[in-house]
Amino acid sequence: MALYFEHFLKVVSACGPDARFLLEAIIAGPEQRHEPWQDLSVKSFAKHLRLDETVVSAALSELVAAGVLERCVSPRNGLRGRGKVTYALCLGNDPELADRTYPQHAELLQALFSKADMAFAVLGSELDRAAKRGELNESKKSKESETSAEEKAAAKPERGKHQLSGGRGRLSTRNRLLFAVLLSRSDRFGEVQVGLPELAKLTGMHPEQVKTRLARLMMLGLIRRHIPGLSSKVFASGRIESTYFLNVDALAPQGGIAVHITHDWEGKRFTHADVLHGDCANARAGQLNGLETPASLLRLLMGQPGKVFFLFQHLLYRYASHLLSRHWQKLASEKPIEDAELRAWIDRDFIKAPKPALASEIEPELKAGRGGEAVSDLKDGMDGESGQTCTCIYALAMEIAREYRARFGQADWVEFEAADIRILPAMSDLGYRVITILYQPALGGIGRFSVLHEVERGAVAIGPKTNETELALQNRLDFGLASLPRRVRRALGLQ
Image (tube, rainbow, N blue to C red; front, side, top):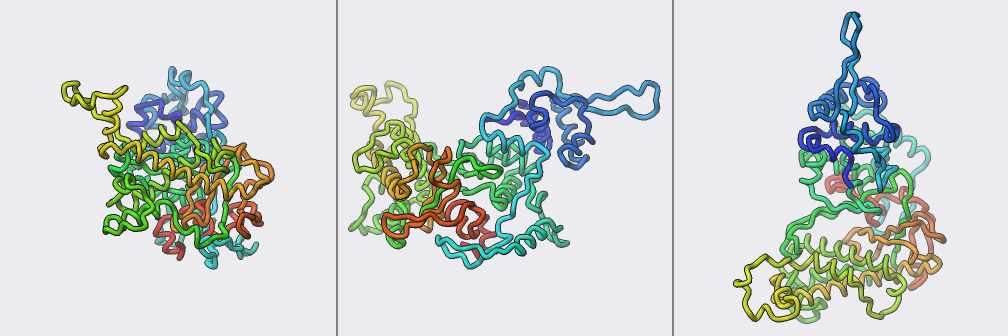
């Protein structure tokens, strides 16, 4: 879904972020989405959106130059001085945007382009340093400390200390624009896959500015998780863009969140990516005894850096989320599950498309087979192992789906089969000790936020926390509910 300002190609190519924000607010803001602004002035617009008049004036001038707005000067009828200056959408632009409703995340997007304050607590301002990795800790905050933190958040920064606009927990217009661009391209769970160059192009900011503002959104809890993209020959496209899990519950819950903490603390130390990475390292060193990874996957992944395995695990989570949403009941048994849609998805991610070739360049023996199957079998350059490799990946996704099904299925009074489920990646160094899912719609028998403790094998108890903000910050990081830039984690003494 594109934002409305993106319909104006000249705006996207020539205008800066402030102009793009104002145009979106003019077209689709909650107060004016049914009828256009009339007699819009710099002063009235700045007051309405609580913005600096200089910023508004410059942005409106950019939109006039782009041909989106027209500048009107009222006649003075013989009176001295300059007539009142107002702005309006140019004739012919408005009818194209008659339906001004966002199809998804509408409430949050409309708030971003309105006068709403949009203030959020800065993560780390009330740090509970006693939190232990993966274990649920009681918060030691008191009412006095909460009040103190709010006062500190509202205070001005010390002289010489640099703060971004909105440094008191409030979103600046540019941070709002960036978050809105991410939201507009995310799915119902807030997952979006987009690269830094694309974000820079859409927002009109330099890549380094975008990186800084992404970090700001993390600090305010609006980006739950960030999976960095990378380039690798392992993937069919050669490049996987960064993935962001956005906090679509920032204003109001959109579904539910469930966390499961295992009783088998030692037995769940490693993810599938950990095992793959270890087996590839051993195979490369000639230590072939005890390897669990099939040979075709070893050949695909051997020699790759750790980042590739981390991203590979994320793709497995995507596939497992699909299985949990479609086959919750079937996953309870060990019977094979055939999902043609998932198999095709895995093929697209890992099998390279064949390069066009002249008929004379194709050897006769490769023409054999129905529909050119022999040609297709070699198109990934893995000596014809593409089908076998993708079957192995399918099996790994099935194992993860069954792990999640078994553990959340311990809450057998909850009908998870009635919801769509998305795995929210927890901290990778915890293995499967802690696992987290998002689900929509909300379900009976379980709160909007729940932590399931496996008190003994196969039996769970629901923890007392009813909101993720009640957790210690280390817990939120561990469970995948929040992210902080590495330098900030180090400064706060967090892992």
